Image 1: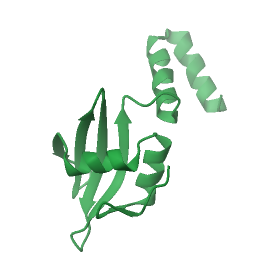
Image 2 (image 1 turned 90 degrees about the vertical axis):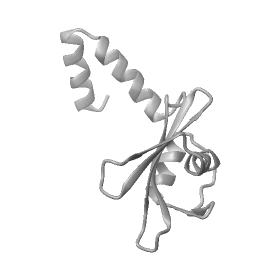
Image 3 (image 1 turned 120 degrees about the vertical axis):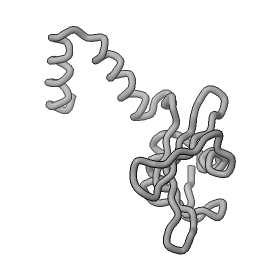
Image 4 (image 1 turned 135 degrees about the vertical axis):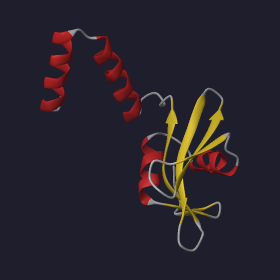
Length: 117
């Protein structure tokens, strides 16, 4: 997938492009989420907005803001649930296993994480 810095009349940061690529979200789907969101919320950081769009069984979320020229900038994006095989999917599966583990299992997960396993 090739991502563009200027696409759909919007500026896409390198961070947003990298995140969408690693999460398997095509830029045209993210653009659709921006152009016709199902919901918008104020973002965690001042001046940002969170756009959400349900597409089939997934929700695409974008973090956006306007720059000083009033141009829209996509800062980051993701899909929930994560797509199979992506880093986010693997992290989610590990989190599920961690939550189900007993005391010693959680200790083992923490040791593995610290050792980079």
